[in-house]
Image 1 (cartoon, rainbow, N blue to C red):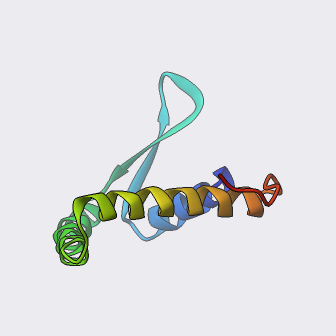
Image 2 (cartoon, rainbow, N blue to C red):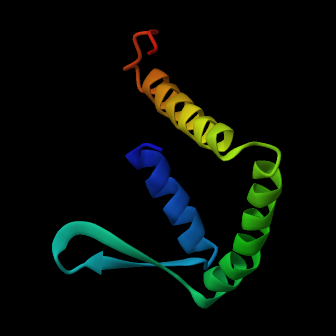
Length: 93
């Protein structure tokens, strides 16, 4: 995600009461984000489900296949981001 998308996503989560935003005392331009109680409750409920789904999906692949899939998806995400920001040249490894 680029800075604008992260900023918008964070603002949305702050507005929904899921994140608290404060100024970073070490960097005047920076902001610190922390989960609120409401955000923590949602995360606590969703994280185990996400781990269970990942475990179920991974069970269909060998460790090597799962690792290769994660690497390929990471590259695909990076390439997609490059395309969206105009930095992709259309070539791949």
